[in-house]
Length: 475
Image 1 (cartoon, rainbow, N blue to C red):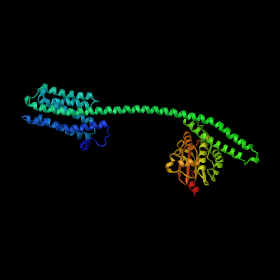
Image 2: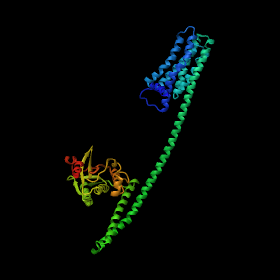
Image 3: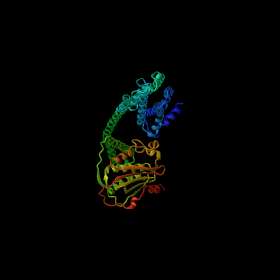
Image 4: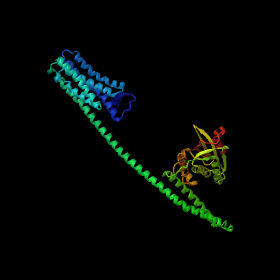
């Protein structure tokens, strides 16, 4: 029943109107009271018509005014402005009350209670325009006073005969005002609840902001601590690695295959592995604590690639992989931190070599025009185990690898790609990845080119893509 009534009321609320909960409640109340109000006033209209010995213009004007209230919900639906419709309602009720007061009873008129209701409704619907409400009532009163001064109160019906309609009017006005009082109480309760919820939300937000600030402070302190500890750990590790290498060099040839040499090699290998982990933690800690420095410089990309190839080639071939390099004759100069960029590319090549067995690792370097800028694009393509689509999002997270199985089988901290991505961002470069399980992966780094480049790039180089290299390597 309630839902059916709400559907009828909501029909008059303009389509497409977005209202808050309190605004929707006021709109529904406006429609409801203007549908029910004329019904409540029917007793007044009927009795007035039967009491007036000669119903004329005054009687029919009051009757018409009462029925006009039924048009206001339709006016709201099509005007789409509740304020204007409320102003029309207040004016119509004020006019009806004063008009009935003038022609039926004067200061003893049964219509006077509705004048108080009109005033209260004016302040309820137009609470932000109190002067407009007062001005509206003042104008109507001035008209009544002018009419009384000029003509007095015409006695169309004797005062004694208006007593019953007066009681009907008082009862009707009481019912109407009771409804509005209950509704206003509910509105105030709703607003108090909203205010309480808003205050609770504000307090919760302040606590969250404070907790966030503490967490950021703690995280920065942690990063600084890790950076200091990592730096302190590198010194003894370098000593362990250095002395193990020195002892291996000092060993006599006849003891070259002895157990001691094997132990020294294990010590050296474990030390280097631990040093690489410490270096990763140190780099990440510096990035998170904002202590890492980017040295912007213009360097020759061809020399850079040759250095990377010389360093990575033994690593790539260690697992029986072939190392393929594709690069134009001349790359020119690039702007960025050469050391950090070398770290990123070597990390990608190291990963490609680690996850590829007896396959192919390709390093593809080219210039590309993207938008209005010139870029050097460096791709590392392998034919290794590949990465599932749902696991790619985890690659660049701190301490995360593609899957738990990968971490168990191949080891590592899961920091390399996270550090690489952060370093690229600091240098204005980007790093992206495409992969397919069982076919391999392609990591792409793009870094802006220095404006003073030495040679333009041919269209052939710009049209190269990594996918053919990946496909041919997989074949």
